[in-house]
Image (cartoon, rainbow, N blue to C red; front, side, top):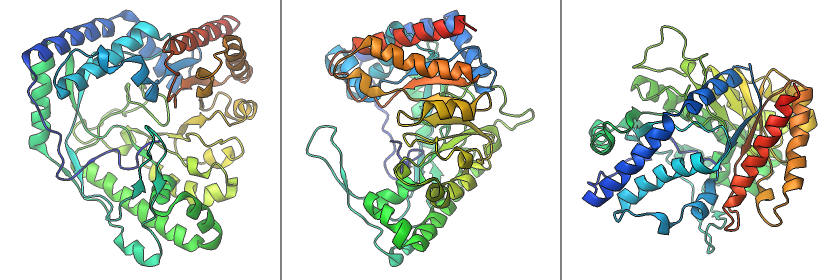
Length: 432
């Protein structure tokens, strides 16, 4: 689940820049050279071009992406790291992930030869911040502590104020350049991943069960809160623009709840590279908390507001874990809608028939297949069914394996899953 406050860091907590020990510097530079070698392989540009065509609804074949997410801790463990400093180990881990991905997974991830430095963007927050109780179990679920308890609390919600700490950004660039100059392409980037989670934000403040009750008992209160949140997000976007903090995401930037942004449709000719606007970008939204409500309620309490936030952007994605196949008519009304998340709980037949060649069918296969009895033939049949439905309806299909919190310490399952997926994509492509 994405963090609703993911674009900025809290004011007063800029990232520290720490000089690496000589031995750590040598380790990460060697790994950087290996990443650069991988990035220079011809397959990377071939994949970029496939993604450009795919994202422009001119597909060559179904695309595959694999995100181990929580499973990474079982693929690269602390004992695999050689750096001794905390900062060195953090950099080492990111580089090892790219190398591991290239050497193990048969998907369509593009390994880029860049090192992205995030601008030091700070926020004052929303005034009323989420409170929750941590789980006593490692990586366990936390519980809500509602802080929005009635109309009087609405006055506590304030529009975030955004600032850019130029000195901190310069320091970050200096550190990265000192490490990777001449090895990787060091780039300073602002806000590139734009994703709105209004219902998640409301739930964090109010509680999940209470949110459901509010739709029936307190609809006016829910609507008023949504209007406040929309106004706050619109204010944040204006501040990003005014301060030149938006960055292009027509590249390998993660998009929506899975996918990448490679496209030549944006930015439009004549754009200002110093002041990127929403018209130059992808964005997305989701309301997975509403998986258990009807289409009309989803539209009234979420989509109505999400459309206001997405309207300025050139291309949009929608959805996460919520099954959208009973409410696609509403989703299709989103301005610039291009990528739709079809979750493991959605009806893949309806999705294929409704999306056809007009939208990106961003299918999320079951991550549960990687735990318990790893049945390769069952996985193959499951993937084949959706691929065949997609082919029969001329779908622009992508298969994105994510939400993989564990493989029960069998890291080869990711490798085997991606190999099966590649074989099935090759099979369906050869029959066209």
